[in-house]
Length: 357
Image (cartoon, rainbow, N blue to C red; front, side, top):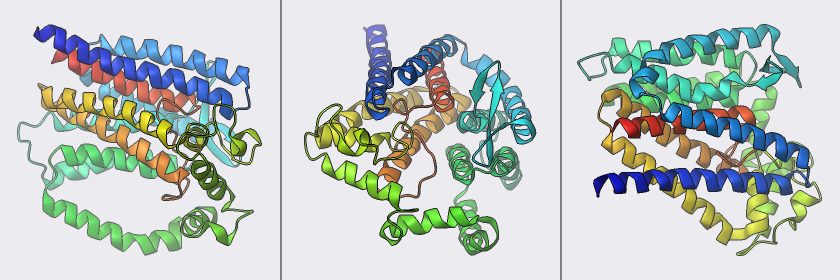
């Protein structure tokens, strides 16, 4: 009876992932104005990532733990290669071409850094987070972030930092250290605004506060997204009937603002169903975290659960104007191979931890 319950719960997680991923392809067909070529390519990426997830899921979590620092080093190396020989697009070098495929290393770091932090923290018999361990953890986080900022990609850098901080928090950071870090962060805000943020990055923040100040320029994206979300009503306009997306008023429809496409076509009722499947996934991940047997598994599974929620909230907040546009995709739904790869690696790890449990 116990084995049956565990198998059923696994099926719920797997079923939810398959449903959201499949629906993402259908929604992408609408968001790209029925471009089957894009849908087929995303489908091929989805099949590859799904197979990789199953492969990781059948791998012993201890083996995943042992290779975590080596994967981290490989990612650092790839970031350096990207900085010098990466593909240049709109003045940014964020992609590297490997075996004919374009790959964004910074997307995978959202999972690799928590893996490395969990590996480091699990070695100490004393689970208390002293200052020395805290400094090393921040070095693990900040080293790759330095190269990501150089691309430049400040938005992804902030998300990576939050992903790493989640692991530190779950690892048992002391309360006084949290207050110290909060004080440093608040002190750094005016300095970052003055010396670090580029003009277009400052403009994104100002646009979030008042998008109507430049409705045809920097505020155009957010205004069109809000119109799409609000015009969906309760039941939506229907599949392929969203005016903002089909008439191409809404930019970045397949990636950053795919939630706006969804809300316009399926309305509030459709959004509730989307949230239901996300809630099933999160509930299952929380269950796996609670049942984790080792310190490494507990930190890593807890981090993955929180990161998954962070990505969902960030993308939706971008679409409704609560956060500046930072280029975060909607997990399992948005177009993009690198983001899809990172999410399925994370779920593969969750399945591996669950098998160990």
